[in-house]
Amino acid sequence: MNASIIKKHLQAVSLFKGLSTDEMDPIVGIARIRTYQAEAFVFMQEEPLDRVFFIYSGKIKIHKSDLSGKEQIVSILEAGDMFPHAGFFRNGNFPAHAEVLETAELIVIPVQKFENILLEYPEICIKMFRVLGEKIVDLQSRLEEKMLRNTYEQIVMLLLRLTQSNGVKIKEHYRLTSHFTNQELANMIGTTRETMNRTLNQLRKKGMIQRDEAGYFLINRDKLEREIL
Image (tube, rainbow, N blue to C red; front, top):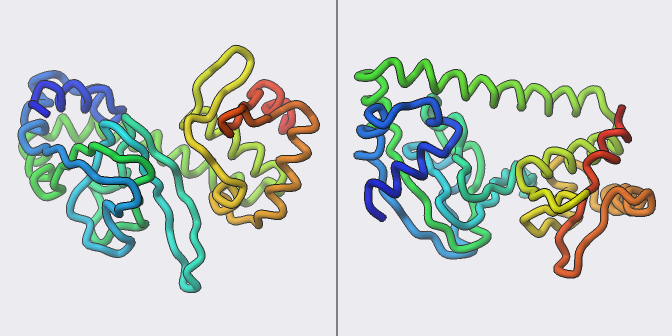
């Protein structure tokens, strides 16, 4: 993949959208493309955090393991996404596992080299902090959901988030672009599969969700939003 393709892809990522072509040049200069096969791990939880990734193609599952080995899915990422989000401004280790769901081409940027660029071009920092501020607001919203909403409402709000992060609008529905099992959805908010099964059945009977012939969720976003007003 040549530099022009890498630049075009990175400029479409929210983190770099505000940067000019000249500001992008030093970043593109330290970026490299890597291919990862399905079921491989890009990195493991607690490995040294020394690089950040941008998905050119494929899908990545970000998940954590607690002391008992139980998995909690943080997100399913697709083309255009970056991970880990705080990678450029956080010392230490990777906070979760990154597992390849579909063969992926990833643009890799070393953290130390990127930080050197930020020291040379502080205006890039300011533009990037604006984007990271939006991520903080999203995380705050998720925490409020956990504290103030019951499990039924948390599941509804999870589905609404997925229509934004992993959904494509098709007529009155949003079709999720990734397969999600009920267990995976349960792991995303820390509930049981049985609770997720029961709630999804309730939402299906109300005509708010369904699965298509390929097994992908079809979600009526308007109806779901009215459910939690």
